[in-house]
Length: 228
Ligand code: V0D
Image (cartoon, rainbow, N blue to C red; front, side):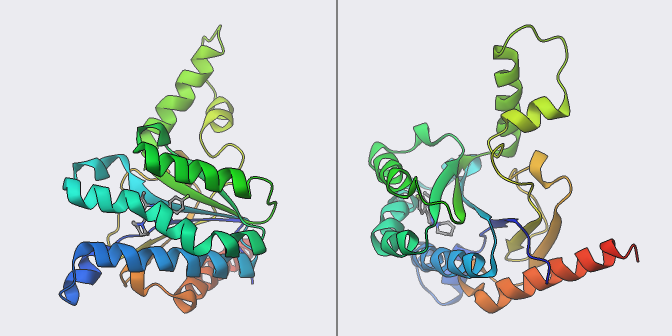
């Protein structure tokens, strides 16, 4: 099997999953948080090097305040429950997106987790938080301009200044919940990625389904490798 080095996931459908069983949206988000742990561990076991998860988009600020407040409590929930396990597995936590706009409590929890896991050199678990793909590109262009004396900008300039500059290219992008959109997730980075859309909600996306998505990726690589 060909293992993707970098997998990115749009974890969609938590609210709809909860509604389906007459539970509040927050319940879906909470179970979705446990699933982040399950999929991260499966990815690590398969030998994935970087797992990037779309946890909060720049558009998510438009949601009701109560829901935003609840979402902002989830990093602490996740870290309290699973930091020990991440340390045992040598997994490092990093983020992309403008985390400076997050509530200060949330920000402190995330910073502490990044410090504690900072010297782990196994899989990197990247949380995209207050992330938008267009703003990532704009930010990279502005970095290049700031470096001075710019008359033109190359693809390499942008690749070297975009948020994911230290990670390998995204090999596989998975979106749950059967929406066939990129929704301002990694735009630059998905240029050559395989896209797999899965017909279940994020809380239902288990290890078996993750493995199936990796197998689909692997079979596409084999076909491409054989030029057939
Ligand atoms: C809700 C489903 C883990 C999608 C997953 C602040 C939306 C659960 C984190 C997390 C969220 C963040 C930082 C960190 C460790 C874990 C998370 C948010 C939402 C938005 F260092 N799950 N999760 N963050 N959801």
